[in-house]
Image (cartoon, rainbow over all chains, first blue to last red):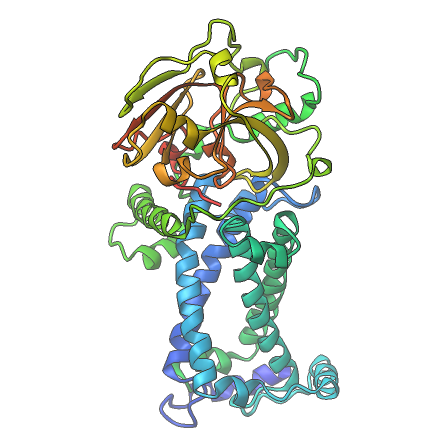
Length: 213
Length: 258
């Protein structure tokens, strides 16, 4: 992977106006709004978690948490949720309407995922054409979209266990919905870790999500 | 730390202290913004030129008021909180306050009077015997704390909407305000006050409310977070101005509906 990155860095300075558009403007805008919303939601979520931890062994250090104390974190969380959900609805609607999801994320064959995964481990996965996602990317991007749906719905079921009580039942009740919300966060943070590390290893992908090419 | 005395039956003394300590307001925690982590995101989220704590707090409070409005819209007068069987009751049911149980108000039930005020026809104070003589209702519902944990309890008492009608309260008023013996207070919206499960609770699990759970009166509202369920209630006012509340005034969301 790192040798790939080195060979690509030479091309970083190619004019940004040439080559195919990898990410249209709406993808780039919603991506960065989402990044901000996630940053606030996760940081404040960790502070809220600390008020009543689900696991004895896990507390988030105050330095990583947002909001200062429970009331502050809740204010951040319930403000950023609007940004996250409105932006998310725009992104998903456009993703389906423009055919981008179908084009970029399908098909996902288990065999192809496995072979691409092992190729990635050996550093032999090509990133020459950023317009085409390999099978591991497709699986991860589709997976994090699912985690996004689960975290929003489980969050709603914790926020409104009376008004949306049937949604809460769907998650196995209020107490279990808290665990679902937590594990969806864990999945998203795991994705983000891989996502950010790989973006830094393949810098032209970072350029593409900022400049489009 | 105050000395532990006898806890009421069914109450875990260790849990009491643990729960009481968690919600303690510390002046050092009052500012919501700490360090560069929060400042970076602030500029973009609020669009404010001046990036300082008070500005961000004000912006967040504006959103919180908007969320009050959204929650009032989501609130349904007919949607009931789920009820549970006896076997689901959490035992021991936790005590939770910003003080330890030792510091909880010790009220003399014989001399107790519930004061009535505001937009009400009959402001005669009520004794506990009189309140116990009214039609009683019962519920086994989940109390959800703003901290995240929840517990299922069993409450018996007078349906608040029945009581408000009985005293000739102006039901078109906007708020009901509760004053508590220890200085705590709460304001709730009239639609919630009139919800069929909102209860002027006199008993927990068919026994007179122990001190831990708010003797002599707790306002049980299963459609709101725990801190909107005041204990040790001494006065009830019907009014059109929002008198706020202990935690709401410190930044917790006002409506806090479930």
